[in-house]
Length: 355
Image 1 (cartoon, rainbow, N blue to C red):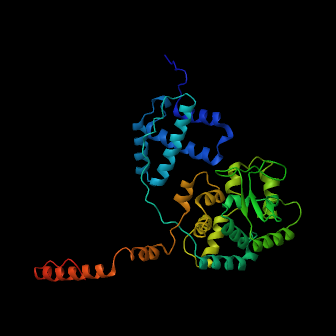
Image 2: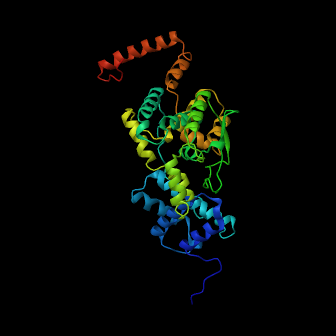
Image 3: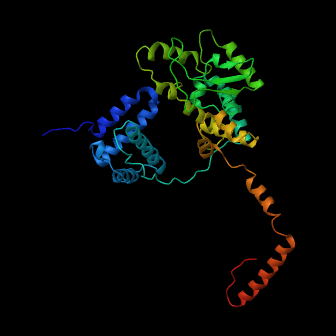
């Protein structure tokens, strides 16, 4: 009575055990996503022994989340997280096989990738410059650097002056250690990478550096915000890895939306500037490997799936290409024959063509 077989654990204990074994090898945000997915699985199938989980439980979970209103993309993300947790158990010899291995994720319609036009970028930069006195952030420089380097928001806000080599005209995107001056921060996908710095952007950065008081290592974190993080949040243990990723600047998204609104730019996010930069690299002839490296992706599938927008002139170029595949005289002869067929069919009330 009450006997528990070696290795037997409820799902709630299983995910805690997995996190303990993994340690700091995964990002805090990833740990949070995995934990949320496991909570939803327990709601769907109960807090049963993880060794009893089968493929049917995964299919039940998938349908339950869809019925609860989760989007197919969200359900797919949660399923991938659960698959990873069970796969780690297989690798640790806790399970013989991954019970969710063959559970299919919901199909997600491919959405059109939002990229900004040159006119929209000009409008946002002009508006950002005009609103400079209303914000402590250097919005025009942030937008410019995002467009020319393809850096993520988190990468920009965790950029320190020592990452910029004004002599070599490069920017190093690198993780940060927990020191007296800097907080710990990790890069997504890759360890570090180097990006080119344009000469005119370099001059703007030099000007910003000259205007900043001594003792502030972060390029875009305003002195007041830096002081608050250093004196109030870090000493009290209120500053985490997730904070360094998402909360460096308060109301960042709200401020960007305000710029968009005043610039009359509909929809779009700050991250879409990165997509615009990556798409432009391809249009300028950079190879797939080069773009993947500059973007900081671990594989090209990510670059292709999420960031490559179709060139505006693709349809026009395709039309021009197929025009040479059919002889104009043959096409004209074919059309005349079809028109005669239409005339005969029209007499019988079967007009199937509007030519």
